[in-house]
Length: 225
Image 1 (cartoon, rainbow, N blue to C red):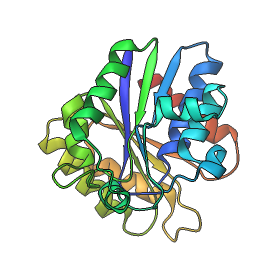
Image 2: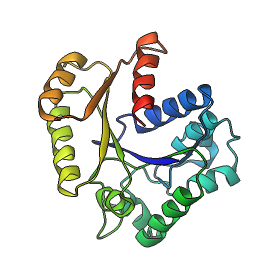
Image 3: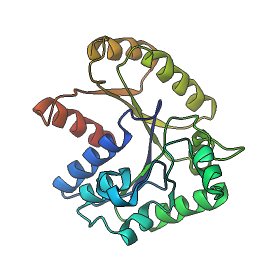
Image 4: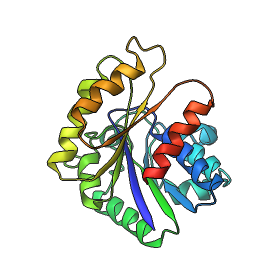
């Protein structure tokens, strides 16, 4: 049916939170959904349930087992660094062509909607020559860009938008995931981005626990995909 790449303006912005929220929304609506997180760093096998692939598997209603983690996240590294740095520490480089082929097979085999969660931000290095942007350009599927509302997020987000536009990639939505304790109001961040984002939809997600507003925001995002 469809496949989307969930990326972000940086690390720890909320890609997994948004992807897991979409999965739960789709499942609640009776819509088939799959998800993969091909590359993960900072992975601790002893704490797999709290890892990004563990969170995605829980949202999918699947057990967090070594085989299930291997299925959705075949490139796992221990150091909480960019993939190129983490891989270098382990002497186990990430093969870019194999990564792209893994994703293409998942897209071809999907039933329903497939979410591919990236790693870090748009320009994070994967190896000595490729970034996440190169990964997204190779797949050429629509993107969801997750941003924060922290001071500095506007520049990071607009830089990401420029990079995406230069590669002529399709951006389905910008998700502004409220940053805890930010000095910048969420509404002000959204208002400013709206002036620069053209026709791209902007979805604001408040930071409170599962509130009606948060669920409505995820529903709005799901309706775009």
